[in-house]
Image 1 (tube, rainbow, N blue to C red):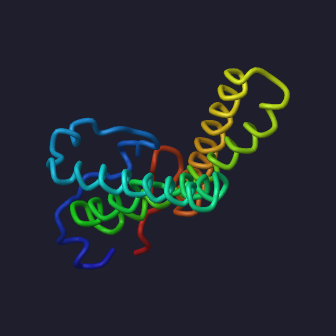
Image 2: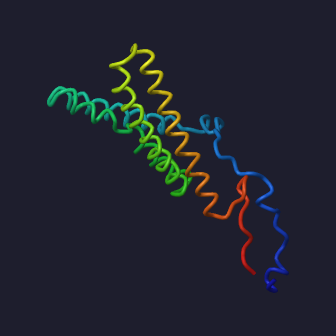
Image 3: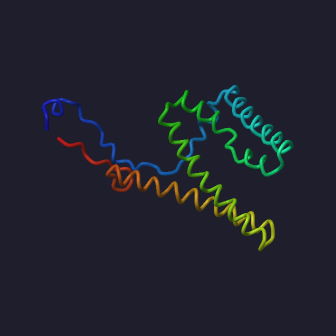
Length: 162
């Protein structure tokens, strides 16, 4: 132990409380300003309008490609980066990336299932595949992040070397 460590005040053990893997913070909804909500809705609406115009000009397949664009992601990332910092925005990008894999699963199951079963059942199966793929990838990446950082269950951290 160094002298600086000996003089430093004792810090509470950060590893005592497990790190949550999944969570929600509904209290943050009340802190959003109307301008922020308007920006998100404007981004979403403009992407939808562009998709509609592309569909009119080049057909539904081309327009459908634009509908796959995450309409409010740019606005959301901008607001998160401004209010909570770049690291929080990076976490949202990672979540959107994993969600995109879930969307691919949704599309693949939809294409396969619509030829074999009723529409409602096909869409329910596609939604389930999206949830399983997106959640599974999220949990896998969280496990890998914790494992690589030396965490042992619940977000424990490897002690710093002396």
